Image 1 (tube, rainbow, N blue to C red):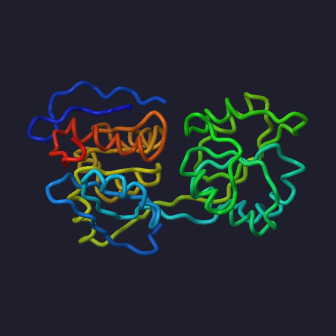
Image 2: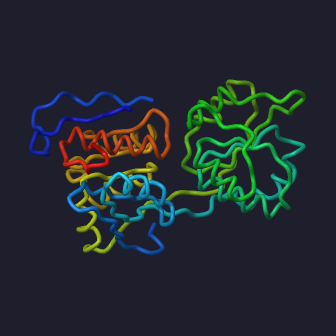
Image 3: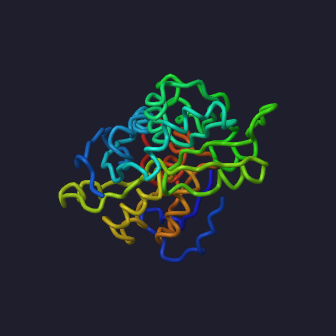
Length: 295
């Protein structure tokens, strides 16, 4: 578990004198509402993924007794290369050694293109358990999942297929980093990246909903776009006063870049389990009253 935080005082507010933060390593919503899943007296955790994508984190947190507020702060739109996907997938069996999918949303877009292509037999690699589950739910079983849910790890570990083309098709988010393609290139693969979807930040929400969201003790981020949206809506002072729990290092870096330099927690490998641990560690260090199941 990684942290980038200045300590809270015993009363649960920010300590005024603290060491500098360590350097971190490693559009409008379709519907806008705050959903509340409450456990009396427990810390409130704000879930900010797009509508319909918060279920697993909410279930894991409510099992432990946390109160969850849900305010979707991101939405997905088509990327410029999305129309190309079906034709590329039809040709993929002959032209590409692997198709690399790196997120549940990427899996959703891939599955749509795969169906339009006639569901050809493909060799698919998936970053992370959530991505793999999304693919399996749509009828595609990944043949490879890296030891950590990180693009750069997949790049270093992806097996070569004897007699294969050494080419990888990578349907990506417009905003995705180059970590995967860089590491694949270093490993000797040729990468064909296409930007099939984009993630946009919600620019505004009704004032009453924002007031409700601001009562949260913890804010969770599943992407840099969620960080951007929250800072834009709540402001840096409010953001730095919360426990900020990130799904992984990419969102944590986005916090630092946006000016959230206090109380930032993230796991070494992205995933729901590590994300919950980031919430719990943040609550403990903030001296928030933990639910009984989390003690």
